[in-house]
Image 1 (cartoon, rainbow, N blue to C red):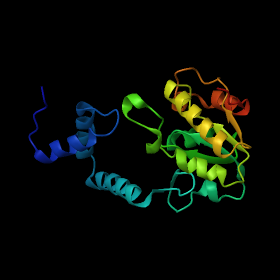
Image 2 (image 1 turned 30 degrees about the horizontal axis):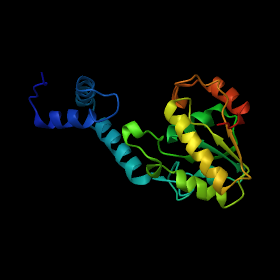
Image 3 (image 1 turned 45 degrees about the horizontal axis):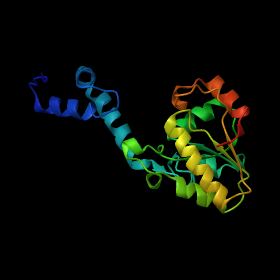
Image 4 (image 1 turned 90 degrees about the horizontal axis):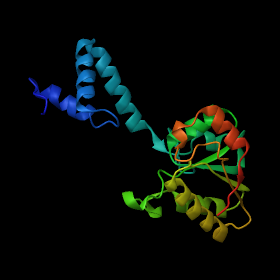
Length: 205
């Protein structure tokens, strides 16, 4: 049975909060009531921070990581090894790999994985831009770091075949299977991920 609200404004806030991933109506109501109990300035500060984030953050024109500039700080850094590109599913995965402090190359964020059952095809991801980037030259190794799921394997295979055709001299590797089968990178601890990166192996069909 739907929750009855005594205020349309409260109901609207709950509806908005419940759109967040993992937040149901009950949790959204708890958040909304918490904000009502706090000083008004606290709720406004949260709203302003979210609005500023949404307005100010864009996607890097090179790697598609989040950035406040046209090119993200990682791509622009002279200290990064620009001949190595680590391919990940999401922006969150960039953060996870960076937290290992074991990788000093660049990234390419796909924005998802190929999943026919969910209606996600290659053309909906940043795969073509990856191939163009690598084919343009300067990249010696592409590391496929997309986890160990069926969708990740499908995506890796698709990328590998395209790179073979368009940049045959580029080395393609994948992170070692220290990442449990069926796991996304997000649920892999940093120590295991660091070992998987260090022990990466040539990609094999």
